[in-house]
Image (spheres, rainbow, N blue to C red):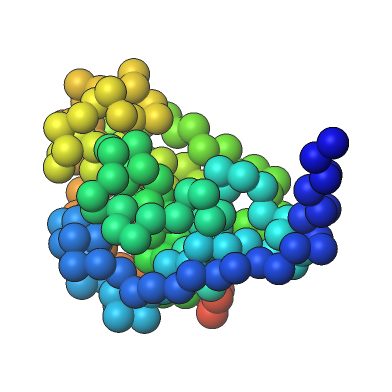
Length: 197
């Protein structure tokens, strides 16, 4: 009779840590330009949460570093299938948000009002979307613009809407380091930002 596996909280958590690969930096620069300090970013293979409580196939980037479970970790996401590269781009969106001063950990912990789905319209801008929708929106744009892979998008209904993405993202594409691109809802203001009076 085989021995049962020990419970996850009793196993040590092996963590692999690395810097971004040249290929990952190349792809990220195409989208984020110089708005991210790529040298500061670390990618971990291990649970961010104590006792291995990070669910399978869930990545988190609360402090400007990305944590993938060991089975999802890659030595270089730029060499992975499109959907895995897009997952990486989604997480790099949270790194970008964090480095611009957005409270990623605080906002992510609350989870209220953070749908991943988004609705594009010509009058909307990137700052109109919550932090998770921004991640999917930018990853989907990346799939269309750089990978030419609409089938890899989360919101495939926009697979022929590159011009609409260009419109919605015009401020971001012009100045990706501008904090005005961060989520603007009162519930998710960047640190140090004050409410208009």
